[in-house]
Amino acid sequence: MGRLSRPPNPTLFRLVYGPQLASDRSLVLPYLLRIDAAHVVMLDTERLLKRDVAAALLRVNREIAVRLARGHDVLGSPPTHRGLYMLYEQQYIEHLGNDAGGAAHVARSRNDINATVARMRLREEMCGLLSVWCALLDAMRSLADSHRETVMAGFTHLQPAQPTSFGHYLAGVTSELVRSAEWLAGTFDCVNCSPMGAAAGFGTSFAVDRVQVAELLGFRTIIENSADAVASRDYLVQVLSALAVLGTSITRFATDLQAWSSAAYGFLDWPDDLVSTSSIMPQKRNAFVLETIRGEAIHSIGALVNTLAGMKNAPFSNSVEVSAEASAHVWPALSAGRKALELLTLMVQQIEIRPARMRAFLGDAGTTMTAVADLLVARHGLGFRVAHEAVAKFAAEPPGLSAADAKARLEIILREVGPEPVIIDEGALAIALDPEGCVRRATYGGGPAPETVRRQLQGLARRLEQLRARISRWQQQLADADARLDAAADAICESRSLGEGLDVLDQ
Image (cartoon, rainbow, N blue to C red):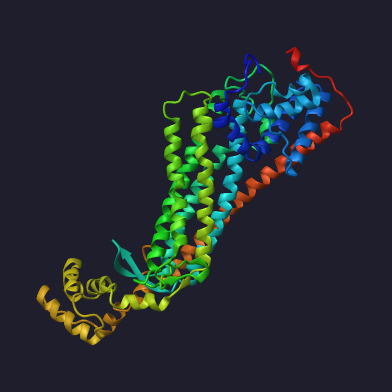
């Protein structure tokens, strides 16, 4: 190859070329075939290749694609090589000879090819992951709607705070997850830009049509600057940032679910096929899947840090450090994120809620004290701090007082802390002490009132529908581009006219 007189050093082959080829066969080669076809179609259109050469190249391309789809090893297993592309190009040379077989590489480089493969692969991965994400959001929204009136304790600082509903809690978590999904979807346009035509990063003197290649590959536009096209991987940072936020959100949600499934709370549980037991303690029901979810969800955080560190101080040009090493972290992060989403969807769909335990917990938790203080302010005109002080003393009373006993005790406390006696309405106090009443009245500020939560979920449903429509539109655009490319390649392959063109070797 060129000036190289010896194959790769055996250690280099063992550590770099060999292992890389194993994954490139399945993860890179399908995209390389599409890029190759689009590039040859463009070279034919621009008369940079003779029609018979373009047709021959496309026929070999089609044959390789068919064999690959059937599971054949289309590249063989040579004892030594210098990477996927050289092996791939050799297939054309073996079929067509060195002259025609190597003609497709005019006006391009492994640099713009590799940059294009990464973007093509990533946009498909993003569509798949976002579709799984939408399934989780659907499951959570449905569960939240079913439990808009399932009263439970809300917590701050891990302490019981005020009455809320399980539906309100879920709507809150879903809101954050929808926002993160929209953020990831917002990076799609940045990813879906074509580097092809940038060659090694310095453009080309051949009159290529970069827009045509971009359209045949389903890209929305081209990257104008050739150095930017091959040197930049900033879009990976954008994608990984959104995934890191998702991972953090998932871990918080999974932590709450696992805590509430413990014997200390008993708010919820799962069927036997989703929990494990102990090898020594027969009473255990461990929601271990939530721990797996948390572990998988945070891979993106490490990937983000590693990607940023890998790009730091690297020259702004094509660089293995950036294009291969730093970029490699995104794929396992996407896989782990998708796994976490699928597992969490399963756990949400199969969750068993214990409303009676949730309600019983409220009885001794004092979560209605804020409502009592609000009553003193709204009904009796006390300043909030005076009311707060009085109710703080009242909260020390034994739980379970009747409304009449609570009224008597609270009036005594108010005489001790307030400027003048207050006569409390027993009926109003009973309502304030009722957790269900507290939830029903919390209609302002995005609170847990069932009708308020219903409106919140309707808004989330609309955003989810819009997100699904975007994903569907992207997938259709990619499918349409594939169909256009196939049609264009077929037209050239089936053409009997050789056409006049410039021999690329004469350029």
